[in-house]
Length: 112
Image (cartoon, rainbow, N blue to C red; front, side, top):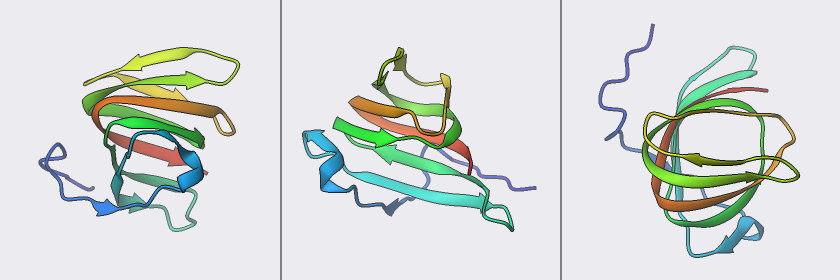
């Protein structure tokens, strides 16, 4: 069992973005892996991004927004507005564009 008190205030470490992912603004990404399976195929953690617009290619991920707001556009698919308390599932290989309106912090589980 892992108990992570204060997830909204947890200290995170820099995770530099590839400049090719930045569409606009100067978004900064930070995060922290809280648990990883022994085979490296399951990862749980906290991730945060400041306002701006970025692109990404997704993994299989379930996340819950802790704070902040963003619009996530899936290429050829849906547009999701996410905010505190919202849960979202992303599919491996989905190409997305994230428009971060307010610094977004999420708790996530990724299956590789």
